Structures are given as structure tokens and as C-alpha cells.
Amino acid sequence: MKTVVLFLLAGYCAAQTPTPCETPKQWEGRTFIVDRSKMFSEFAKISYDATTTRVRIIEQVQSGKETDYYDTLYLHNIGKEYKLNLRTKKCNVTDLTRPFRPFEVPSDATFGGEALVGLSGFPNENLIAELWQGQFDANNFYEITVTQPDCVPINFAVFSNTSIVFQSFFDITLGIPDPEVFIPPSECSK
Image (cartoon, rainbow, N blue to C red):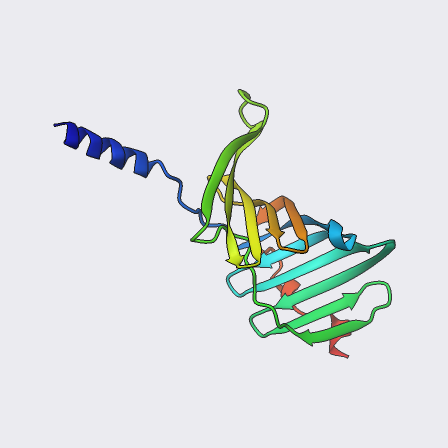
């Protein structure tokens, strides 16, 4: 009888272990990135499409004491990057060499904890955030924080031997209202 009770208790406890959630595949919002080791920061509007591996970022970039403005389109589905300097109107078109890195909880991520963000005890004044952790490779460790139960990204951090890149997301809306957002700027076709 003790064995049956222990087996049922073990099964109940195992069922309580969180599993990685599924992040929405298409959304728009704002993002802030900082890499202090390179004195780099970016504030941007982002359109994200994991279905066809496309990302558009309209960004204000500060590198050291220099500030610039870009409209960058990453079309991983065709292996091209379009980067338009919004001040000079100069566009660089290059081949994408890095793989698409989705803003989602990888299936092999480890659950790191859960927290209530905001006011406790007041409906609609808080959200539950989950922390997930793992490694991309031997040199890159990641942490991603997402809302629960919708799995919308809040923070994404990549740690390497040489840097820590921290990215936060806010003002997220689901879907891509204007699919033409993934058409390269006209300045890039000249």
C-alpha cells in the first residue's frame, strides 16, 4: 500500500513540473537592447514573424557617444538583410550568415521559477512571469522571461564569455496588421 501511495505522490509531483510554453509566432511591439561591454544600446519598434523567419526593426542605436537611426529588415527565409540608414538614406544589402534566433522558450529549456509582477491582490494589476534557462552552445547561455499563460516574451538575455546582451520587450500586440512591413524599403532597390 505504501508503494502505491508513493507512486501516486511521485506522479502528482512530476505533473507539477512546468513544461516550455509556445510563444506567439507573429507579433509587434517595442524592444530595448543593451550590451554594456560594447557601450551599445538600441530602442526599437519590432515586427516579428517566426512562421517565415522575418524580423523588421526600426531602431535608434547608440554606440559609444554616436547615435544613429536604422530601418533593418532581416529576411532569414531568403538569407538577406536590408539596413537603411534613416539619416543618410544609404541602404546596405547583405547576405545573412547567422541563423534565425526565435524569441521563444526552447523545447529543452529548464524552468527557473515564477513570479508575480505588479500589485498582489488586485485584478488586472499584475501578471505572472516565468523564467526559463538553457544553453545555445558551449559559449552561450540564455535566460528568457515570458508571461504566463500566453508565453509572450518580456526579457531575453544571452551570456557569453565576453558579453551580456539584455533585451526587453513591451507594448506587444499579437499579429502583423500590415504584412507589407516585410517588403524592403524602396531605397534598397536602387
